Image 1: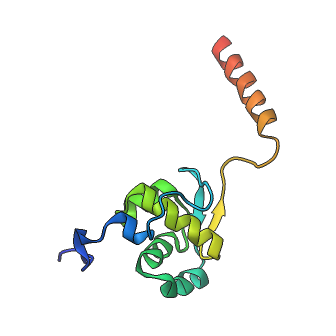
Image 2 (image 1 turned 180 degrees about the horizontal axis):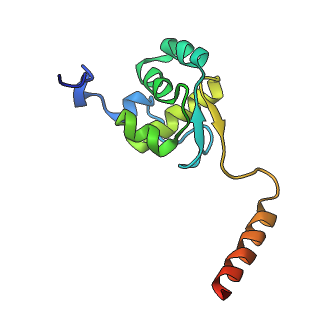
Length: 120
């Protein structure tokens, strides 16, 4: 059985999906972890086809930005804009990999660990 294909085909241009926007509302790293609860996934049905696809991919399992783009077969730029919108709308939960505070101290510590490993 063939996988279900999008009836819109390749006719919909990426800028049409994002309404002409090329930059997301907030920067989300490629490795940032995103999830959708069953409630968020259900609410996403009213946000549009593409957002619902993203929420379905993230429902109950953590996905990175790169995985979302790959699983939904969306260009990464389009996925970044839609995911940022969904986080702002409360349709996805974002868990960043980098801490907001103490970043410099952590980088210094990692540098010391790396130089210690090199000396071994």
